[in-house]
Image (cartoon, rainbow, N blue to C red; front, side):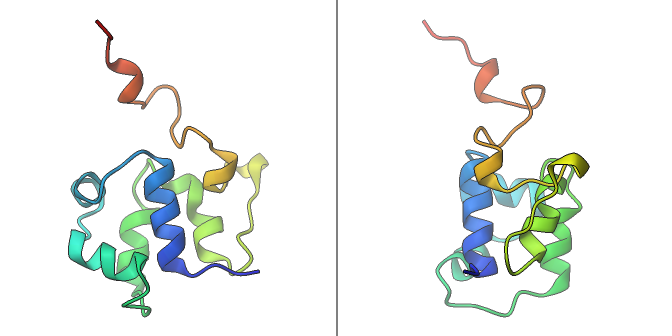
Length: 102
């Protein structure tokens, strides 16, 4: 079963623990545009938008999954889906781990 690219963008963003504002800060994709993709109100996603996501170092690992209709992955090549990257982030880039409680 294939999933729309808009839903994939939402799944990617949420798996990384990002708000639309934070995703905008990283990719330059306006929050209103993201929302229209994620909710299916806008289905034609241009290659420029996809490139903004896949060219960002934090999201490179999702390129194959994002671009394939079947949600392909290749873990050996570092290409995963959000489900295979449960924290979404490498431990070296996690902002959540940097916070201290108390």
